[in-house]
Image (cartoon, rainbow, N blue to C red; front, top):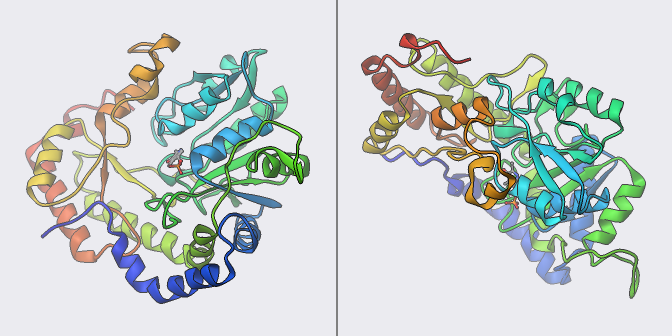
Amino acid sequence: MKVPLLDLSRQHAQLRKEIERAIRRVIDEGAFCGGPFVEEFETRFAAFCGAKYAIGVGSGTSALWMSLRGLDVGPGDSVITVPNTFIATAEAISMTGATPVFIDIDPQTHTMDPRKLEQAITPQTKAIIPVHLYGHPADMAAIMQIARAHGIPVVEDACQAHGALHREQIAGAMGTAGCFSFYPSKNLGAFGEAGAILTSDEALCERLRACRNHGQTQRDCHSMVGWNGRMDGIQAAVLTTKLRHLPEFIQGRRNCAERYNKGLADTGGVICPAESPHVRHVYHVYAIRTPERKALISELTAAGIGCRVHYPMPIHLQPAYASLGYGLGAFPVAEQASREILSLPIYPEMPHSHLRHVVDVVNQHAANHPGYRGDHSDD
Ligand SMILES: *Cc1c(COP(=O)(O)O)cnc(C)c1O
């Protein structure tokens, strides 16, 4: 049996007719860059998330960069984020000319540890970017409280967390701005590159709309240095179609996670992902932890099961960021996690038989390895 990490073809087979109809409308109306289909998606996505405005852009990376530009972050400033995220979070900071400052994570949720935040704030701090990693919201109540006390805007990296909840609020709609990626493999995926920014701040929204369109506020009048960061019409039409099904997609992922949690509960050798109280995790990634990752990867691979590590090298240890001078040992919780995490296959349409096969192989592994039963030193 072959069990892929992700199989988009199952979702697209179900939605093919609906999506083809939507794409045909874009072709018929010739609304390829920006335009009515993008506006329709923006309205619907903002409403879905409970934010006033959504700004459709070209990618999640672009969304992060533009949010910082919109908040006037630039050279000489610093932005606090976490080291265990996709490199784009840090790149967006660097591309504004500002410096990324990392803080360690909570060992249970793998998201920004609010207890580390206050001591990292300096007069140079111009923004904070918590990452809702794997689809589990960061502790936004605590983060927002500290940020407000210091008057620092918060940009949520919600690129993995479409529809996730923290205390009844939707990820991406809690901070000053929230950034989404619609890369095809994300929980809400386009047929190419796309992203969006949420905000309820009207002035920021105006700046962001200008920024994604070369800083243009009126025809041929450019009030700021922007970029080409527009969303395209075909992506917007695909996304509007898929957004109608997002609640089902989320439920499908949560059902898979529940089956994994039950199936692996007695294993002992691995740790299943945590879901904090007052949180709805949307499981973009189902990441277990095992001290014997290398062995488990070869056993899964031998059994035809796809798996991956998100992410094996924290950003402060990447060659691209060597100049920041952090080095090994700077963030022990994130570093330890990077050695033990392993992402198992998960997607809304994943067949039960596939999931059972994964559970069997992981349980077999745990039976042969002491795992955490022999080592409770960490967490
Ligand atoms: C995917 C992702 C991004 C970047 O989004 P793109 O659309 O690929 O540019 C940024 N941050 C996180 C956490 C992501 O998962």
